[in-house]
Image 1 (tube, rainbow, N blue to C red):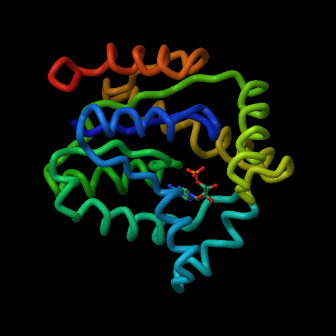
Image 2 (tube, helix red, strand yellow):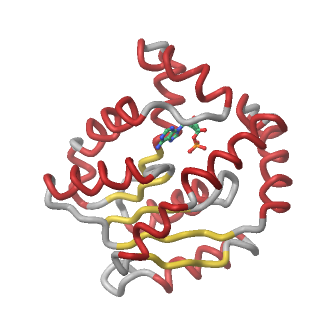
Image 3 (cartoon, rainbow, N blue to C red):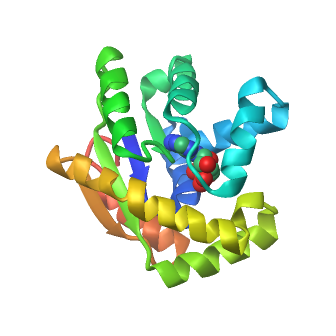
Length: 190
Ligand code: AMP
């Protein structure tokens, strides 16, 4: 099963992807995590990406696609994957589509978690305190939400046109949201 998880920063994608990964036994591939690992390791790419991430902007499409391609080439991704944080704009949608066509592994379903923006801001403030993420400061959060609305929100339409989009209410207890996700999955995955 190949799943794309969509939703604003702080909509709970990462947490839900962690649960799905354990239940479906497929990797959770977060481009944000891949980038943070590169920053931590101090690779050339990480150095380049760091200031962009800290400002709340999107890292260049080429860099992220290269990282994703490398990750998808690893053997564990052959069984499927949960993609979190990619695609983040329409160019990335096209790039992913081409990449997965080449790998003969098309996306099965795009799941969008919808959470009202006031709730998102509160959640991200909580995460800033808990995880000490530099890009969870109020100014950067505002910028990330702006970038989301402008560039990432249209991604849902891309999958809707393909008849692959499922929109879910992301508000509520973590386990309740997870149950909504499980019940929405095509039967062979649930
Ligand atoms: P995330 O953990 O998904 O919120 O990502 C954290 C930051 O990493 C984002 O604000 C971007 O700067 C960068 N990032 C993650 N995924 C992508 C992507 N698909 N395209 C461009 N930048 C990304």
